[in-house]
Length: 369
Image (tube, helix red, strand yellow):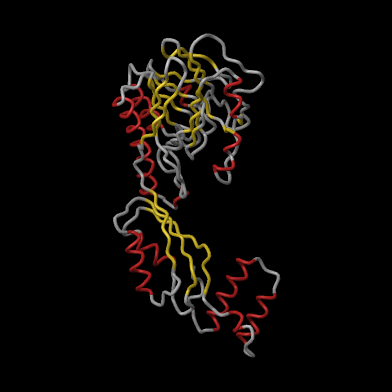
């Protein structure tokens, strides 16, 4: 049997993470739809026997009527190929969810209970799926002594957090429906096709495809849809396919040894060349005190290339010789001594020093990066 598996598309996402709004955010939401169309095309092109979705297909609190119609038409277009959906914590199943209110084509099967239920998907192969029925507090689908029954190969489809990989997913990732790797085999399952983790991950008996189109900066790993072949003995061979429409770039601008704004412009032109989509620029290095580094100027230049731009600083310092300045018998020296000796958080100390020393230099552009 061959299946295509994906998860965590998050249709109708607000895209506030990339500082996009208006038409830009709308185009990014449209790109998510294009990604789903690429996934369904992949299922057709690979002659898959079924399409599996591991949850968070859409955003429950933001989903639109147009998205409902788009999903219904898209999945109906795969008929007679079956589509199996295991709702997650963002698209949880309930009486008001589109899973319950929409009239789906006969090839769409939605799991509707917070326990695993079996569906025969091929000769000798059973798929066990479960749903989040609330946005939080879903228990381990494999807990409480769950044990699948019957001959043949047993697969699972659900949205959950394998606990040993939680830390690798980054800050803020909540362990919805947490489980341990060992729970899969203890439950009698041969393989689990999962959703929830946006960073792709593979185990001997489980697969996270990762979000197929970028949802935040800093994502790494070969994410996309997974084409999986399941043998009669329960062996699973997975191949990842890139289906993303959106390009997201992490760029770096090191201003050390720069003495003019032209150098900044030239460097930005170089790092942006040949790219498109969304960009996050990290500004770092030792900034010459006389050099103007205005965030909006940088943003305006990058927006000539990218649809949305986020700018952050990391390890950026004004190249003042503070040890020398604090020894000066001057107002500037006294200011440096007072601030450096004050009980301030380090970021706040640097901000006060930066603004104060620029003011004492007679500058009126105090708020720079």
